[in-house]
Image (cartoon, rainbow, N blue to C red; front, side, top):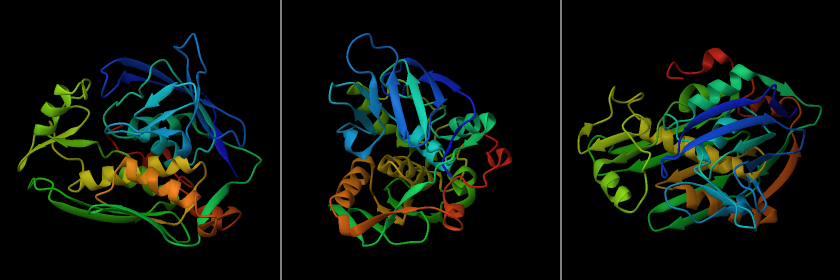
Length: 306
């Protein structure tokens, strides 16, 4: 069955790129509503923006959606990952600015808030996208791929020259709360040199050592060090789940990312939906529904960083 929240949950923090303080209220929504954003700060235009793959617009270093009137919401990937990872299918996200707050750089604060509220089961089946044929996009050495699997699996590999990051790879299935336990607390990361370049270009104005892991060669500059030895690749998997959630329904398939990012995952979804032979829509009854992200997750599964 589909899920929404039992009650509204409020979050507040600065946007990573703008540095602006933003308030977000995630509210319950009816069955088959999906995920929508509402810009409550706007007095003109259409404030509603669908969290959907075909609403994604080009942006730097994040995922951004917009409607046909130009209303935008950016840096949505960590919130989308939390919704998907908790098994929340329907919600209205009210936001009083153009960018979702970065909080601690991961999804864990969103996850903890959602699980404190609790989930409300709805009398409508979950419709999922089952992958039937491999679909792949490439750009240089970067690859993003979807192929058949009984449940959502995510595999990722990254390669960086910095010794503190190096080459990392990981593969997980997302069933039964895996996202919450294994990925939700993994923070966004960057190199010290990138911070200087981003700020010179008016980006990452709200970034700090408290909401990102900053690497410099073989050193981790952020206080407290890493939450996981392979936190960077875990965060890339977190991002991938958030970007895949823009399919609008859970995916039953294996996602593989090699040096991939937000834009490439969106290109992959566009390639998928351009291939009607590559997928089918299915109702998730028992036991298929038990393999969906978020099923069986408990508040005690939330990492201690929340």
